[in-house]
Image (cartoon, rainbow, N blue to C red; front, side):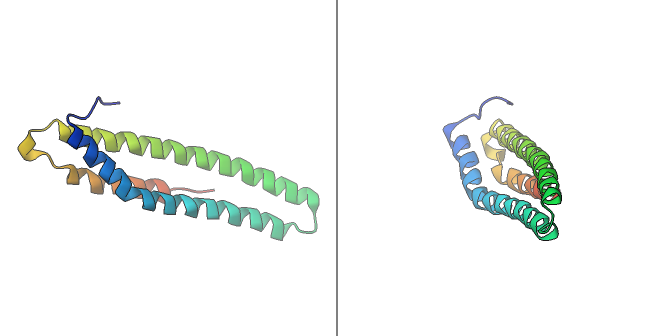
Length: 120
């Protein structure tokens, strides 16, 4: 990590942002879970009459899903670190020029990119 934030108020700014963004992250994660479930349903619908093909499809789907979820997990960890660094850098500016609001659109855009790049 880049160090600690400078004051308790700086931590509150970061916490406040994380609480603001939490519903969006949950919504996007639910969307990812729905994508995975849709792929599983496709396996069943395509291979209803062939058990072996169904099993193979589900195994491939599970492998793809696991890899994709690991990439997503990494992306979110990276996003958290970059967001923390932005807040940290603002915390160490002079009191008159601190602008935590500057970090939010940057973090929002990065988060949007992470979820929009999710592929199974």
